[in-house]
Amino acid sequence: MTKTQRFGISMPGDLLEAFDELIAKQGYANRSEAIRHIVRDFLIQRQWMMPEGQVVGTITIVYDHHARGLQSRLIELQHEHEHIGRICCSTHVHLDHDNCVEVMVIQGPAEEVRQLADTIISARGVKHGQLSCTGVTPLKHSH
Image (tube, rainbow, N blue to C red; front, side, top):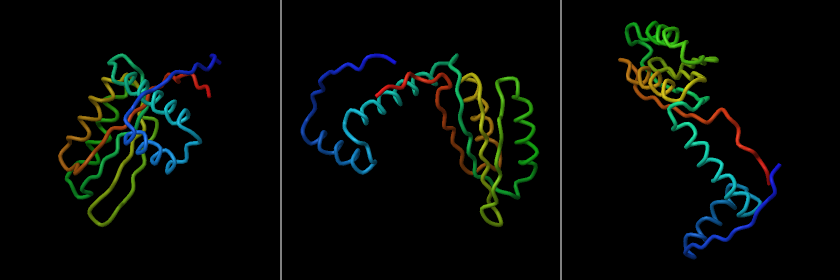
């Protein structure tokens, strides 16, 4: 564990007041803990933006259950792209008579995960989709 270092931050009063209100609502013990969380999040985002960075994430899609051939196409895409990493699991939920949601947990190189997500999200019959990722390499965590 590395030694904790102190530093100062200057910001306008109204910005600090809004920050304090938000971190209190989210349950942070103090500003330092909230800022550490923000810095970690920023570093992880940069990590998964690098093409060679390893990521783990979810591809979430909402699609028309009746879209012809879509379920077969989704399975085909998952198998075609297993070389990039691995789809660890997927969960399928029927929302109503016409709509389903599918969540796929995926791990692999950031750029290739993004390409697979784009391909899945743009498939005919998908109404909405989103990729959410985080870096695989954990950052050192100290308080």
